[in-house]
Length: 150
Image (cartoon, rainbow, N blue to C red; front, side):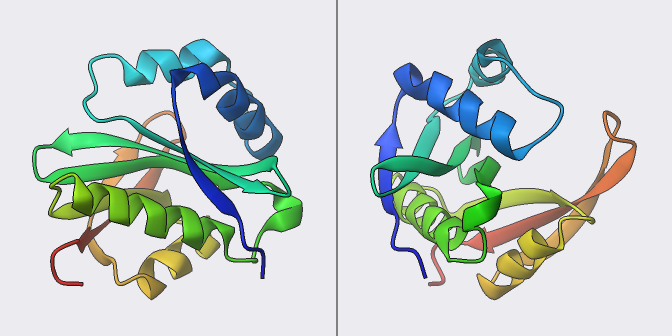
């Protein structure tokens, strides 16, 4: 079990986020992909997970609506998965969202990402719907969890 250090990062850390994203996911993205996504968003939260001072994972979210924080994107380097780092990132995001007045946190996940589905269920998320992802031509499962019932 890895004990990652979870840090709140800022826009100056988007190059680190971009590098991690491109080591984890395809197709690769550039910094502008993230900067465009953040335009007009409120309360952007970028968390970095470090193990031995090396960035190994991240979580990004922002306000979806005044009571709901959206956990948009997260990832952990493949060689460090299943060590609790993603759960540490999620728990830090939950704490930040609750401290900042959000009542709910929402995530979306493709059906193929079974590890994320299992983690969401383990963290007491409820399935609240489906959304069509036109970019990938498949459904996303929408999960939501109350931050006030904990």
